[in-house]
Amino acid sequence: MTSRLFSLTRELSIRTMLFTVVVLVAFAGRPCRAEPLAITPFHTFNQSPLVQIYGLPAAESAVVQPSGKGCTLVAVDVANSYLKRETTREALLLDGEGERITLALRYGVGRSLELGVDVPFVAYNGGIFDGFIEDWHEFFGLPQGQRPNAPKGQLRFAYAKDGRQRLEMDQAGLGIGDLRFTGGWQLYHDGGENPVALALRGSLKAPTGSSSRLTGSGSTDLALWLTGSSDYALPGKWGHAAVFAAAGGLAMSDGQVLKEQRRNLVGFGTLGSGWSPADSFALKAQLSGHSAFYRDSEFSELNSGGMQLIFGGTVALSSRTTLDIALSEDVIVGASPDVALHLGLGHQF
Image (cartoon, rainbow, N blue to C red; front, side, top):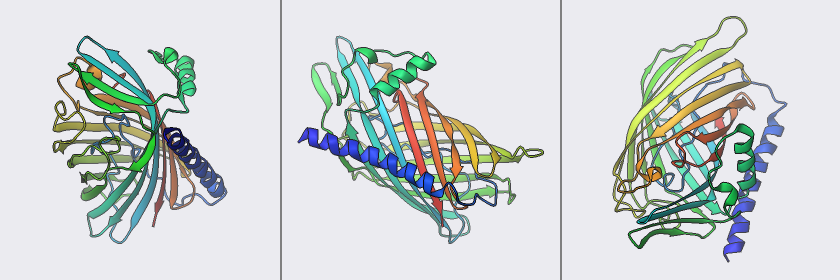
């Protein structure tokens, strides 16, 4: 049964990536946008199996949807993790690959108000990118850690402390994650083609996923954050550039995953920039980080916060449809996956 579920989830991730490629080819010959391409943060966050189960949000745009307008997003995050730590009191193993597919909707319901919902689907398997990640680290001279000696294609997330097994998950499968209900309030917008904007955003995560399968946390989480951006027209034919940032806090009720060691309050933030030399594409990079989700451990991977460098770009497939493509690398080693792939297909309506 486990091998069958592994095959199904592996096939799902491959089909999702193939679908994205097909969409890119289908739209490649269509007209580009008539207005400057909006430079916004990547709609992704730490995909560690011990973090993505909570309500940690993406930074999102500083411009909320206008009244009567909306957007949809299909975001695919593929993250490969390998971490093994042992002491006399504790043992931690995170070995596997996760795919998170998020169906998101945002809609403007008033002059300055936006409402939305995120429906995530989370899958785990032994991984098909183990070899790619070792080659990636070798090419860029990054540390491999214990990866070369680790078994390939294994799925096991486990944590033990003081002789008691506190986490054990080794079953491949696909399930619905924790639903998120979102809102945004436009605090400031200067009305320009290259705007300066500030928005207050929030999200409420409901415990609809499974904590035992790590598709959910079992907790109800509330996040509030400010997100701002400033866009600049560049001289000549150099297009435009933007800087963006977000900062906020996440409050969580008692869940079911390592609940004796879980923190109930976490801070998070994002800082990034982008450059669009033409209306058809933009290059972007951002640093996204958060404080620790856990405590009372000898392992810094649990006790410390996480930070990721996310870099890639946006391609305008049509005047209303865009595709984000990005890779992320863990800046604080072990607190987030070694390498993660992000694809985000968005459409305005």
